[in-house]
Length: 134
Image (cartoon, rainbow, N blue to C red; front, top):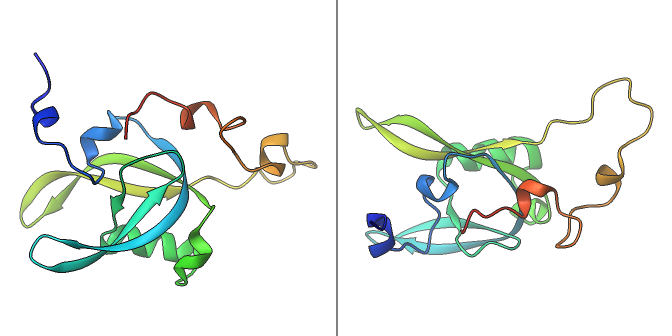
């Protein structure tokens, strides 16, 4: 039997789209769109992915803590998105959160080859060329 979500597709990324996995993505662009009752929200789009992530304040602050408040500096930066459960208005709900790739371990003399060359369609890390269809 097909998943009920298939009957109600969304143009925005949902927790279920991640299929329980952390996914490394590269920020491609940030757009503003109207969500719900004429509320404007920033939407984060990723290289090689169709759906955008509607940025809530928590995720926007996490990214700005690492990359700065100027969103033009976010483009081409790699982050990890992952599904989790959070408290929202007194209920536990599914959500997507953001975290950053850990910097290289201290004491390592030379960076790895994948740290020198940013991922592209041909040399992307395995988990960026995955079967998660968003």
